[in-house]
Length: 113
Image (cartoon, rainbow, N blue to C red; front, top):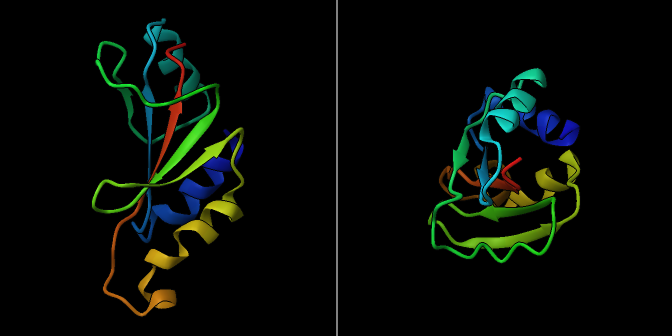
């Protein structure tokens, strides 16, 4: 979580990346929300525990880098490092890729509680 907080802080002003946590398992959503509040997590926590979608998660934590078109471009198993995420989104940054601005999203998938 500290590395995701660091990454979010780096990109909050520029708006060039976003983090969303998806709770995909049944659990105590209130406890998860409290955990996030205690750590001052500002990104959305989405309760998707009732969905019939398989996220392909084999363990927690796992994160997915999703491009602006909604395609998963990278799956990260175990914790993430802010600098690693920066390197992964660099191809989407117009300053480094010579393309128009895009808005990649890092999706952190977590258990429901």
